Image (cartoon, rainbow, N blue to C red; front, side, top):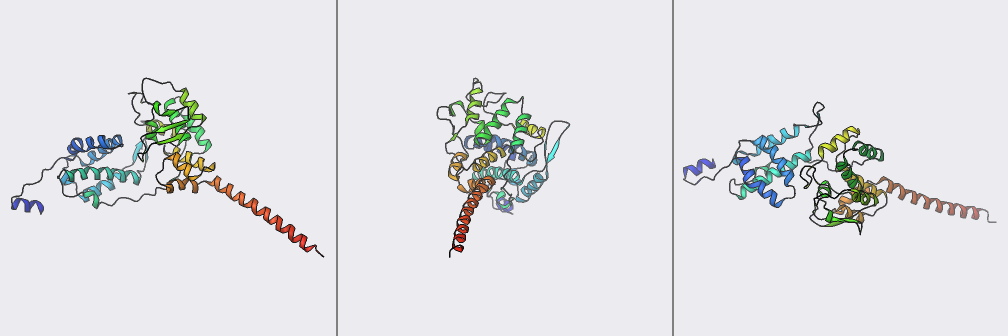
Length: 324
């Protein structure tokens, strides 16, 4: 109706543009200049273009985006070497992340006056359960490191993750200038909260970092192909997890494991918050609440105090009963 109205009254129609061309010309340059997730955005854009190919910006209606949402959720993730391909369901969070990138693309289209409003705003996102807390056992850790024998790069990255709690991107971006051996800490400059923080290192990490040869690159864990920043280790990590027969494990669970072990050792919530780089103490409290060992220790202390008190009361009552 709007197009008919514009033509009837002689208004100049707004220009339209192919979705894939707008991504190349406008969104990806914006993402590279302004977002830390540029590499991830490139991957997501490939998925979006494969579905919306040859569609113009105006043709992306809420109903079409809803169809994409349902299709993408139903499409399983295929992984594993050729001849041993496996499938696993796609997570709700992954679908939502694709919708967020699509929303940003179309918000830029609104700014460019190609469309009047963002159709993604009218598409309901999923509500995933983010309270996942998968912790690696000592036996699973040993099996995983054994499966990584011969793959020094990923094995070293896993050891650092388990002993520092760093996020994958923080490890990939770690440079030798950020390693402070004298003070025993790592300087994390590009964080999720965009706030520099200092992460202490133990003797395991210190010994490992000293053993790594310093190549002609600034990065501690450079890409074997480019010697620049490492992009991904998903394939090698997943292969090792499958070989070790470990179920339901993601790389981010190594961070969960580190935090849970610190909480089990009695680390207070605010110290843990600083090390992990959480912006909200509520996030840190998940690990404190989940710390079974800390809970048992607290109960044991209470039990010993009660036993002592019970013994004192019993002795007093016995003494009173023996009075003439």
